Image 1 (tube, rainbow, N blue to C red):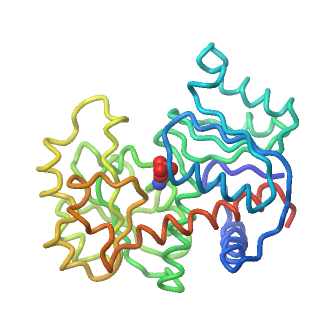
Image 2: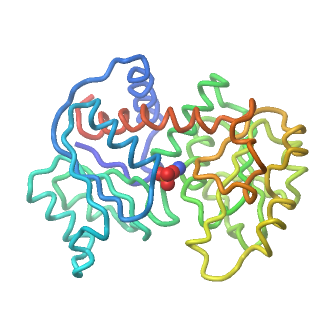
Length: 295
Ligand code: CP
């Protein structure tokens, strides 16, 4: 039994193992591992929640989905006591999405006899999204070594960036960032970032792949961008910028139309957005198999 809270805990071998199970799942080879998993979604989600639900069905795992408004958290129960309850009930795993940062977590993980899988915790980590994005780029480029990947937007609040960038760097990609100054953290070296672009057009010229991120208004306690239309003009994917992209672009979703990107560019030829969504299912099958099953 393993847990997955942060990509920083994964070795290269672990990642390759999960990617390999995910690819097998895509070819229809899925082990029916069975068991019981609780899906705690204490924050809104479409892609992650539905793909974990589907992944569990494919794996023969029974699920209990709990949202925050229907849980005893509203009566004052702590997150740890909620996890202890699922352990006591004999669940094999708990997949959780929460609005707060689950850190430090090592002692909690060690103390529970239930596998924990992070489906997004505050601004901290979203490991299955990072693995999905890595798989999507490996599909397109084979080897991501030397690939230049630019993340654009709300880097400060992005668990997608904090999960994706270290994985890409682990496999030899070069990662850079660009966004409004208040949304760029001071020390990015811990994520392997070497370059910060002030100007998105210079970043686009440098990059082989651009990952646009959503401006996370729900996590901002003060207005950090001047206006949504101003943001699109200065940092977003406009039709004019699209014409200058060298390669593909990604976005983890959900997309804020006319803020992160213009019009119907989500469906355009250079968009990998729906490949990311599709791979999300296979990666969640891979992660659950890796966490709950030996080998
Ligand atoms: N990318 C992502 O986590 O999407 P959801 O919030 O819809 O799950």
